[in-house]
Length: 245
Image (tube, rainbow, N blue to C red; front, side, top):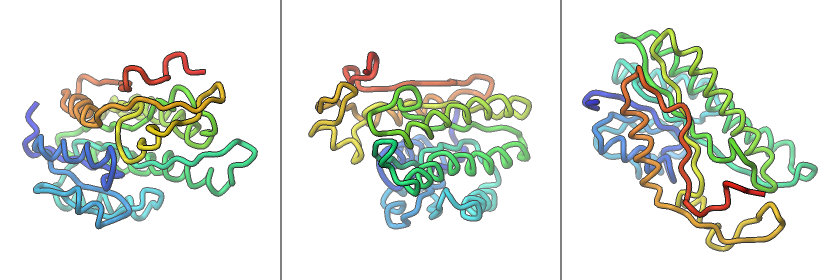
């Protein structure tokens, strides 16, 4: 499928996987709105064809302004990559409630707010339709020790993905989820020093080149709207995921 004139929004575009995905889409010919809290980081990601839109995904007004800008600039939206997220760690009885709420606000409510605006635009535009790709993480399937807030939100992303898929059918809106395990970014650097395992040990975990995540998103995004990758899991081959625990 040609990408000429196709438009995308990527959240969490200022670093890590969001930056990799955004640059891959730009290189493939997409016009991309880069959304994130830090304007300076977004500008580091940006190249020709990028629209820098500082956005707080937890804020309804900020998210609405993002999609209003996309509509005013390009007139339509073909792709939303819901990538923004954060993780906090702590045992259930020790995790501050504020950290729980902050995680839910960013990972789940933020994804909903962006999907809500994208759905509205995709439903109203002509030709109708578009695609939403949610970053679920392998924590949408299996938890790590001390990850109750992150894991709960990522399990909820699976429900969000399924509901968007169902509700989008009449309008040509496809929704899929990519579950990523140990892509090499700033966030996974700690894995080279060892991370807690389900058996109580601390082990170094393998990572893989994050460009493969970007390639996977490009594949999902490049399908015609009558085809959809509902769930795609990409991990380091030898990471302790299958059989975790």
